[in-house]
Image 1 (cartoon, rainbow over the protein chains, first blue to last red):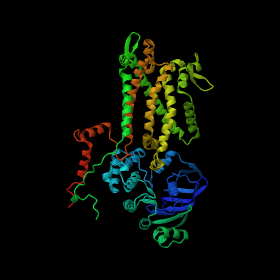
Image 2: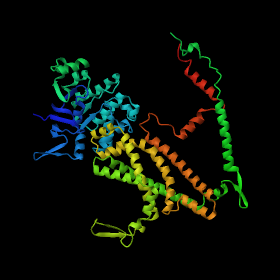
Image 3: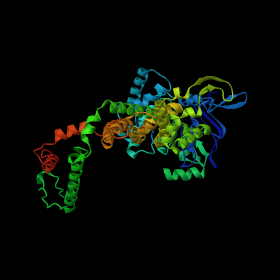
Image 4: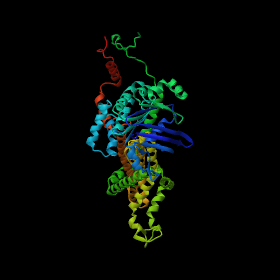
Length: 254
Length: 340
């Protein structure tokens, strides 16, 4: 049996007294696309942020590609990872945010080459070539010298995807990538994500795009109140939700 | 269909000719200001007074002219510029360091920064300058300032007055004080950058230091520069306090001349003219610095004064009054080439 790309066992997360994640168990296989649905406040974004250690988990085990997130196991004890190692692991996981978070003082091209140059220390020529290919892939080859403010939301999000891909990640996390976009711009971003999935990228996507979940997802997870309520193949879950809470949610979204 | 007057078939609408609103208040204000202005110019430039045996302009411009480029004044100006530059460099460097320390998760580090800012903002800079200038009171000879293990043996001794010359005392006093103020300015700048920026940088694997240097600080600059320009201009004039150290900077240099010639007001005018001149240059520099760091935050950068001037010259025709130009624009918009 191969090691799953992401494995969560009883993951708990608390902000002060508020328990946001109350024991999440799930696993994502290599090359699979997992779509997480759920109402706001259900903890889906928090879970995503735990995976690249933007948030620290309080209990349970969370591992990416067989390695614990944020800790090292040695002699039966957990040791916190040094900042340096946390950064090294984050560099292998791409993340795309709801509000793009492009660096506004850099052009589209500079946004993409910044991390490969500074974090991985790759050579300028190689990175520039890869960045040009990525911009071409997301359909923005002519926008390389544009600043984020000069781009539409959909274009910004596609640059943000290219920026994450430039690090050649083994896992991509999408945190409501289309929620801040005008409806007519959503399609372009989803197309890029679909082509990524077809290329075999392992992806976890928090979204409200049911159509995308049905067509592209290998696994669908419905979260509510910090727990996984229901999961399974997207077509099945969407067609015959077993849990009342899932039914209620889907009846409003569909 | 309603005709909005935009179809070319109907032709351009007749231009409105209306009686403009009269503004008598503006005329009264203009006359009052003109009279006040004339009084100012008269007393400032033309009025002559008798001092002793000879007649002189009221403000003694001939004395100002005589000393404006004198060696003593120029030496003082040079020292003032040096002090401003070095003290601001210490202030900005120290300010960035203190601001980053202040935002550190380590309570000891942020506490130390807080304590520094509390002390140096809480005491007058004049007192701080005198303190550094009189350091030899705390570290008198023969031991002086010694390097060694606290409560233990010492390795080396320095004479406090050799180590802290008047110039060093002035830049330490001004620079350390400035660092406390700059720290708050830099901290405000850092806090103004959206948290999503550091999250995005971290998710790409950047360390805290790289994130600060490459992502946060360049964006914080937009907020940091205007008050820093203020601080620099303020520092230019605060250097006059260094006369207590004592240093013969611009103000003290002109005071020395006036003590000899008894031309007090003209000498202060001489110094003030130089302060005004340098401030003007600094203001100009700040504009370009702001423009540089505005890239990315504005869709279009504002034109430089030079570009604005060139546009003004190439666009306007002295023969054509502005109203005619407006109608030009209207005609261009309703180009008859479009439409049926």
